[in-house]
Every structure is written in C-alpha cells, then in structure tokens.
Image (cartoon, rainbow, N blue to C red; front, side, top):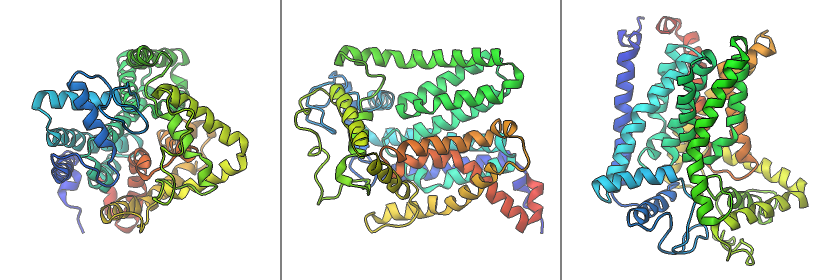
Length: 435
C-alpha cells in the first residue's frame, strides 16, 4: 500500500491544515455571534467587552457598575489583561462596537498561527512528520476551535506561548544572535501581558536555555538572556507605573493572584476542591472578609493573598489534601453531569482523545534510554515536559479549571503527535517514509 503523494509534500499539507483550522474557528466565531453573552466557559468575555467600551468612552480601565470580583463602579481595575483589552479597543475603534468582527479577526490570526507554530515545534523537537501531525491535531482540537472566537485571552495567550517555545529552542541553538534574544524578550513580554502567570515559568525557561547552550558559551548566552529580560521589563514597566499611579502601591501587572489564592484555598472546601461554587454554597463575594471589602482592588488583592497564606499555615495538612483533590479537576477528560452538552463533547473529543497519547509521549521523553542526565536535561522535549510540571503544579496548588490547562494541552500536542506517529509506524511501516 502506497502513501498518498500529498503526505510527502508537507507544505501543501500544512496549507490545507491551516485552511481547515481557519474555517473551523471562523465557524465558532459566527456561532458566538455579535452578542457578548455567557456561554459555557466564556464568562470573562463579558468583562473584556464592557471594559473595552469603557476605555473607548474615555473612562479608562474601570466599569460603570459594580463588577466582578468586587470592583466598585467608576473605580480603577487591573484585574483584566491590559493587552487583550487594547486589542478589543483597537477593533472597536476601527469598526465600531462589533464583537463579531473582533471574533473573526482573532479566529483568522490564531487559525493560521497555531497550526504553523505547532508544526514548527513538532519539527524542531522530533521530525517534520511529527510537526505535521501536531499541526493537524491543534487545528482540529475542540477546545481551541471553541475558544477561537471567544473574546478572552486564551487563544492569543496560547499562540504566544507556542511562539515563545519556538524562540527558546532557536536561542539555545544560537545564543549569540542578539536580534533573536530581543525577539524572544518580545514574545515573553506579550505572553506576560496576556496573562501574568507565565512570569513564574520564565526563570525555568531561562535556566533551561543556559543549560542547553552551555557548550556554546555561558557568557554569550547570559548576555542574550539579559537582553531578553530587559525587553520584558521594558514592556511590563509602563503598566506597573500606571498601576502605582492609580493604586499608590506596587502592582506588577494585574490584581488577581490574591483573589485566586484566597478563594482557591478557603476552608469552605475542606479537603475537596470545587472548581465553581455550587448554588447551595456561599457566593465568592460572601466569602470575602467584610472588614476588607471597602479596600480598593489592589489593596484587597494583597490582603487576600495574606489571608490565603494564613489558611495554609493554620492547617498545612488540609492544604495538601485540598491540592491533591484539584488534580482530577485539572486533568478531567470524562463527561460530567454538571457540564452542558457542548462542554462534555468538547472535553471528550479533544483532551479525552489526546490524553493517552500525551501520557505515552511524556513517558517516552522521561525515559532517557541510557542517556546521560546532563544531555537529557538539555533536550528540547525536556523543556516541554518541564512546562507541564511547573504550569500544572501552579494551578494544582492554587485554583484549577479545565480551561486553565489548555496551554499545557497546546505545548504537549507535539509530544502526543510523536507517540501517535510512533504507534502508526508500527502498524503501517511505510509511514516512516513520510517523516
């Protein structure tokens, strides 16, 4: 049996995959339409939409009414990504307040870039054939199709993360390229401005680059990473200064870490975490200490972080069990009676299908195969698995939702594509010729 000729032409296949990717995401954008309403897993888009309108109207980053989490009407907020809000402000400013236009532009951008970047990662880490499978997988991944049209940070954030990994691999290979170091810093800055959580992973990425490029010169690698860090700092600093001018206290980017840490570790859960509080439980607002609710958003965020730490020190055993209970919620791949039809279908056909191949691929990566530890640590696939460990660990220790795992899904799809390709080659040896 011969392999169809198109499988040998990766460029044609990649173009076809990108076309399918764009069409599917445009379909999701049209489905969500011009109204911004709460669909399953997309409540944040209501906040971004309204915040962008407020900025356009000259009110700055504030809401016209009391808003989630406890931001008072007309008071400054830094709870939401400045960069994504600016994206909506730009689209609404050019085309009028047309959410569908913003959805379609976003669907086009991520529909092109996600398969392209997945292909590049799969090719760099494994082989061109694996890259092609990774591109097809990310194009057809249910979660990424669904969120492709949602007015939230998810898809731009995930796309930027894929780009950052590609740049990290290139910088580790050629650390003397100062232009590449500046571009790497730009990518990291974009990721951080979309969601500040990624800043916690940056030191791990820098350390991996230093180690992977150790034979090419520690000094030149360190200089490049310092340049990257300077670019990141230059991108974040204006927002830090803006926050200080409004809140009169240090806020690096966003005021949400304290809220998340407090609510995620509240004693109300006991030792069993609930991703979204059920109607029979108190609301998130009810759980806030009444003596703190009159604080501004930034001061409250800081105070809640301190209270969250006190929960842990008061009962570390409960915190350990509570954190363990978050693992099934984070890696959930089965349908649930608490979820709607769309959520259940999307979960099963995306992560439910990919998870076994991701797990198999991770096991292959973790098995050094008589390789020295130093060389194993320098492998590109090791960085992908490190992201899984660190990023998942952060959410398991704080607060978890299924959509918080989606960046891990994207990064691990090339790993899943590798294990799927290996399996396919055993079943159909001729596929090896297409690699």
